[in-house]
Image (tube, rainbow, N blue to C red):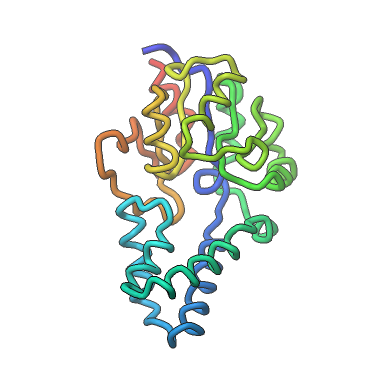
Length: 232
């Protein structure tokens, strides 16, 4: 296998701790459910979201809504639209977003040996966090989905990055936390893949071999060594 020249890095999960945003989504959905039909048991809701996450549903909270409301299609559509409207403004949660422990050291080490690229579904304002933390300067590709007009898991998202870097897919690795949005599309294009078990998507279970990463890590701290291992 060719050596790894480029590392494409997801932000939410491996690098940024966004657990507070998911908690806000859950609180909002529980409020919507309460206003609509008196609500559901919070543990029942949590189980429904966890089950959908494990099954790699691309929108686990929407899946949970259907599980809790079926066969009430009208109610499902009403609450789904309200939730999507709320979740479509992720920038309001950025102020509370933090960088995971070990990130600075890992990014610095990676940048000394590889070309780095952001590969994240994020609002453009997320770069303010990376600038504040002194991380953005390590990335050659500094665009996110809001800048690109296309988002993961669309294969074009990855092709655009690789085309700009001028690096073939088999000389790049995608690092992310989601089997459905990060690992699967990257493998379909021929990138190697590393999954970092962080955030709620650590619960995902691979539904097929195409969802299986080449390497799974507990934290981003061990990423530089893992990338070197893929290159040898």
